[in-house]
Amino acid sequence: MNRLRQEMKVIPRLACAFAVVLTMGFAFLLVAYHFAILNSDNGFPLASITPWELIIFAILTTIFFVYILLLGYIAGDARRRGMRAALWVLLALFMPSAIGILLYFILREPLLRSCSRCGAGTKGSFPYCPSCGASLAAVCPSCRNAVEAGWSHCARCGTQLLPAAISPP
View 1 (cartoon, one colour):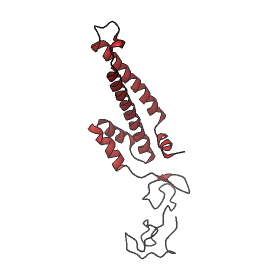
View 2 (cartoon, rainbow, N blue to C red):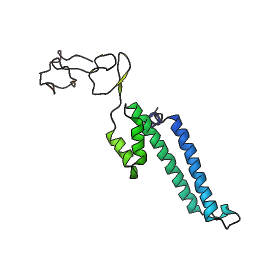
View 3 (cartoon, one colour):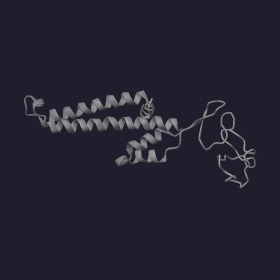
View 4 (cartoon, rainbow, N blue to C red):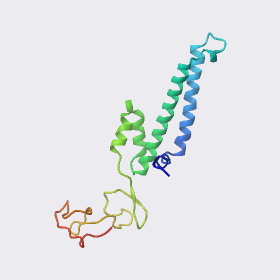
């Protein structure tokens, strides 16, 4: 399975259904507007639609459909990352010129990782699982903060790290 399919599975089914229903409603409103307002004097309004109007109509409905799917993706992805989904969807929805969408993709947190003991989702910066207390990363023997694999000294307390002294995850 490729990466795009995996990311598309993040979109909730309800959001996909909502996108289809709203897009159909949007299309219906555009067609009704065209028939009722622009062609009220014509006997057969379908004949008066130009190809350019059809192209613009198709582009507008596609943009509307993708926008709703993008909001659904933000909701699912924010939940997956342990963020507040409703807040990010509202920001993406109400901030003009897609600033909210851009802010989400710039400020989103890394994916949660699973605890090897209990399976709970934890943030990548946590050295211990908040559910069961299992060690998730190598820790400094002095201050018990997370350290990375190539470090010779702890970044928090300055203790020299020996390969044997670092607790394995």
